[in-house]
Image (cartoon, rainbow, N blue to C red; front, side):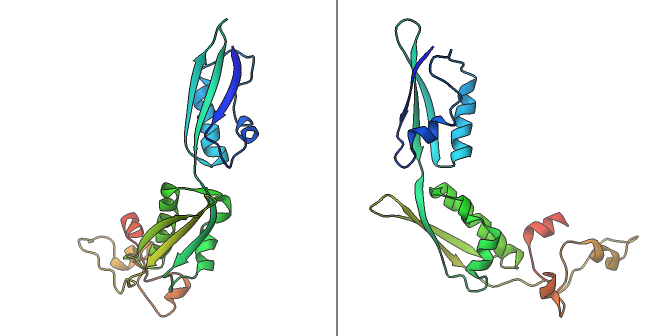
Length: 201
């Protein structure tokens, strides 16, 4: 039976907040199958930890202590975008909901950078590179900096089909995700080159 549940490593997250997501209760029989649920709950529900470990400490009279070790991400202070000229910060934030991100680490920042890069791909800037940096202040809070090197946008001027004998190129262009540039292409993103879209074609 579980005699006590002890939490280690938490700094900015309270023990009560953690225990709310723990499927074990003091006094009940230990069921190893719940451990996977415990780790998943803490990792995905609170979104504050980069690592969660669970260990048991055997006591006398068939009792045990349950130890939960957490490694926290840094509380997020702010996110800064540097070098973005073609796409405004406002447009980026429309696509990325940063309000849901309260804690961050290097891996989380890389995921954000990938999402920003996808926004640039949709606009035809497939040569965009993004450098990431985390600056930790004296209060252990993180400022995330994304430095964007936009590159030059690629424009699809013409689409050529080779080998089509029974279906016309015009009909193929009509169903292709990639569209040729035209006068009002900015209205429907026609002419934007996107490698993923081309792969879809």
